Length: 436
Image 1: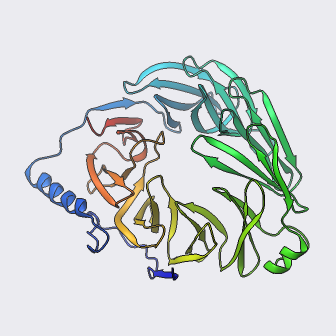
Image 2: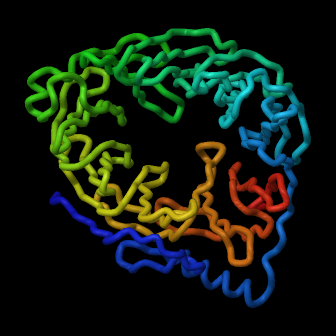
């Protein structure tokens, strides 16, 4: 297949028109649903107002952090004379009944709340006098709020159970620990005075960890047990000469995507792919400009600093197509690209990952973070006169299906399936049922 070059022209940050996305050209990119959306919306506006959805009011004081974790609505409220203390309030959804309130044992700012292996995990930055803030994870019983354990670091789930916690920085070195979710007991840990850690994340959690050290050694570990699966020196003199890389130390990053370990080095940028579990070299290719890789479904995407996107065949390293002016990421249903970002709402396109062809032009939307992997993809954007237009985004066909106009919502939304919690202009949050 010959390489395709797709040029979007200059990035523009113009005011987004309020109308729905225009239908694309008909060849290869059907967006008939967008036309239906336009007709339905025009009919509703001219004939009668949209039916008012029932809303459950959820409290959140000014300065509070609110998150949804499974069927819990969680609010970290500042307390005390100067607001340095924090209290966690838990409400049961969808009714919004208060379950419990507990003071958090560590002063700081909390930003992560999630369920893992039957534990409620609260992550944040610990406030320490005179020192840079460090991350901390606190585990609570979700039914009662009872304290279970506390460990430094922010949590990532491990495949098969357990949590990965990382502390430190590039200057002081990093420490990785895998702990049991039930009790915080350390299962194994690894330290490095320099270099970096990276990992492979699957739907069930992290299953591989890669440690690259300052002397060029690379180790691949089983995330659950810490056992070394493979090790090698990928920065040997021959490789340095072939990539045009400096010879006085590691100069490039290591990434893991699928069953490949990728290194990126030199100018022009050269990417080398290895088997993750054996570190046998598969291929090497020159990309010109690239500074990080990402998974784009069946292809590898390499992003350059000039917003040039290159798609590579992961089996051979052959370049398939190039898109100028795109930043892309993979979803569970397709490849999504954005051409501009303005106020949180992005101009979204759905691409064919193998050819780079545009399957659909969704228009300008802010994608709502879902509370799980199986729910719909919800998009929101401001409506004239206030409120939010809400639609379900199909990232396979590139179509948007209208769900509602929420006049009492302002943003900061999170979804639980077809339930949407958003900040209200009068304070707190509202929970709306988008579809009966």
